[in-house]
Length: 104
Image 1: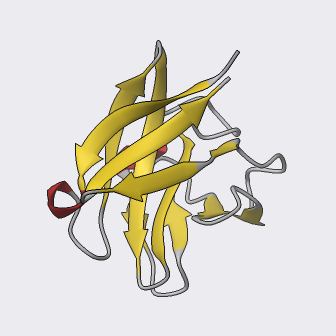
Image 2: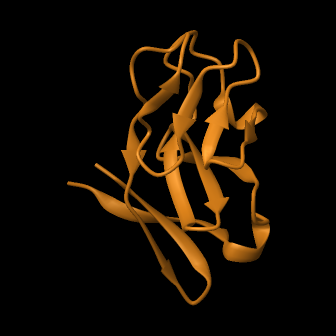
């Protein structure tokens, strides 16, 4: 049965940035965009490298630092090759300025 895990304070992740956290033995990247906070699996589906080492572009896409694959911060959907498979997204909630990630 899944649960919410406390991950970070909102102020830990500046607007336009992302940060990786271990959540129940998995690496999760929290992205902070103009549209809010989003949580994705911290792995590029193209080559299994951490995407948290990349950047968030002006379109709200994570750009993988190794080969330039792009993923939508909100959905994990692939936005540019060489990746062809999206990455998992996680539900989040914010309470008292703390970010929680839901894991099954």
